[in-house]
Structure formats: C-alpha cells, structure tokens
Length: 103
Image (cartoon, rainbow, N blue to C red; front, side):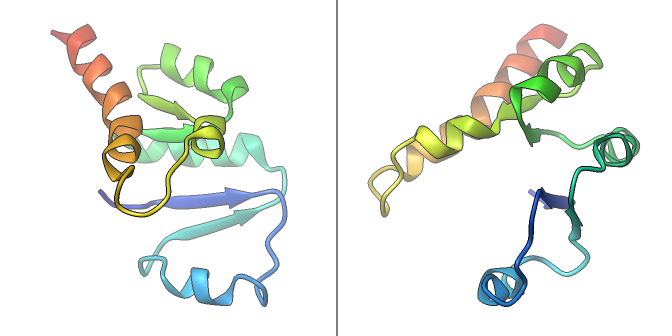
C-alpha cells in the first residue's frame, strides 16, 4: 500500500510533528476545505482505495473507486495487536467487494 495524500480540516504541524515524520516521502498533505481540488487529484491518481466521509464515498463508488468510510476508523476498537486483523479487514472488505463486482 502506498499512501498518496492525507487531508484534514486543520493541521497543527508542531503538535503532529512526530506523526508527520512517519509519513512516507512524497505524501501530499492538504489542509482545509478544497474538496474539488482533492477530488480532482484523487481521480487522477486512481487509487486502489479512498478513505473518506460518507458524502464523498457514494459518488466515488459510482465512479468505480473503492472507498472506506473514515467514520468506521473512529468507532472500530483497535488496541494493540489483538484487533490488528479487524483493522486489516476494514480495508480489505471494500477491495474484495470491488473484485466481486468486476468479476
């Protein structure tokens, strides 16, 4: 998996300095509400999966992109290694669904 872009409404670089340092080189950071520009970049990149809000997920699915609702990451209990499989399944499910629909 290659992370292409991370978008957030507000990015406090000082508070998140350690986390930002862990992002792969070349990962685009977008801050603010430039949704149309983000969607244009997303469509151009044609990623395997897009993690986004429900309001964007349905239109992107209609365009043929696999999506994962970001809210699911908030409400899925993931602590330590015990739930690592649950986290992996969150991302695998939409990819498997897309493969079944194409077949």
